[in-house]
Amino acid sequence: TFSDEPADEAMLAEALSDWRRHARTLDDHLADRDWALGETLSYADFRLATALPFAAGAGLPVDEFPNITRWHGQLWALDAWREPFRGID
Image (tube, rainbow, N blue to C red; front, side):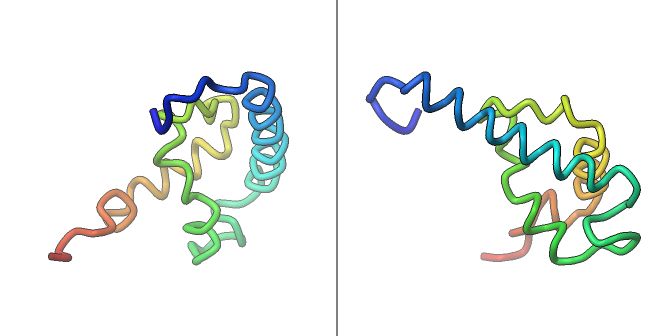
């Protein structure tokens, strides 16, 4: 937890609804392409996916979106995505 304050359930429900709406847009966008901009991995993919490593901990239902799940799996296959700070001391 980040705070001792009780969660505002209405605010959380609204945020989750917003997340699902935007996730649906991305999922639909990814339906006919491998990566965000088409067939080639780009910076856009990394920017769009920045929250995904934290999705499970945040309770975001990524598994409801098969194209996002597939796309994130492709990112997860990249060593640099899984371990972005490897070799940095």
